[in-house]
Image 1 (tube, rainbow, N blue to C red):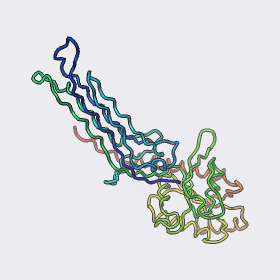
Image 2 (cartoon, helix red, strand yellow):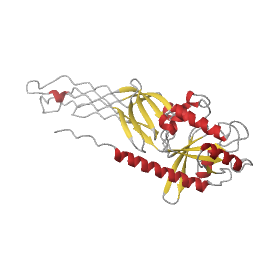
Image 3 (spheres, rainbow, N blue to C red):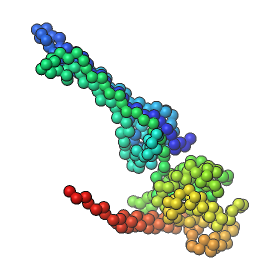
Image 4 (cartoon, helix red, strand yellow):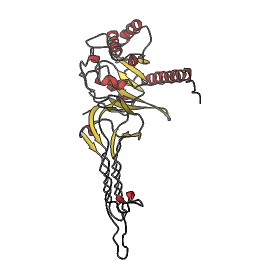
Length: 348
């Protein structure tokens, strides 16, 4: 099961108590206090891992607590520190405070981590309180309680290219043809019920990551069909690959199908709607493909990339169009960053 949202409770370990102890050795009268400090409690750390692609493992538990620190003992012995509790999540996980709703951290790189709650400090032993006027303190400090909070974890996949289109447009077939991904493919709607990632190799040193999002239908932004839960996954893609069935057996025409998806993107997010896109006319191997393509380009007012994902025709031309659009997007992002006005430095 693909899980992309979960609420959990995390708690740092409590600090160990300090020890009340006095040195007792033969021939050493009035040995004095020698109670050791308690160990610090462990912290809870959330770390992104490329080996995980869903929050299902995290969702199997609702409470995560780090071990407590051990108490101090005599002979100035310090209590052991509690080990950190490490929670591994997929890359692209967003951590929010459940009560406040604000983002604590957005984990976008493999191995990136955040100490989300700290363990309590260990209490001081009685030797720490010895003074010239109080040489035999008979008290020690208790360990502090570890921090705790409720968290909302949300997963947004990170990819270069997001595949969008109506169900059965051929997105899964295209992803399987272009990469090593093996999504489920069948002749009925919604064969893709969870996002699929594939890496497309371009030459020896270049590649891009493509995400196949479950087919959208009219009203998806309101939760119709598989709902809007998957639209958020393409918000982080750099460009969109809009796949259109150019020879549908039934249902909307190619231009109607294109407009349905564009409208859903617009209603869901203006940022998503404004992303650069490559329009792909798929299923050119069908009898009406060539004729429908001319009408589609005329109504759309721009050329599209025509392919047959099933037969593998036009794939290299499509990869070239994707690489060109990604390069344009990079150039645009770089120009936007240089156009930003530098902040006025504060007077010292």
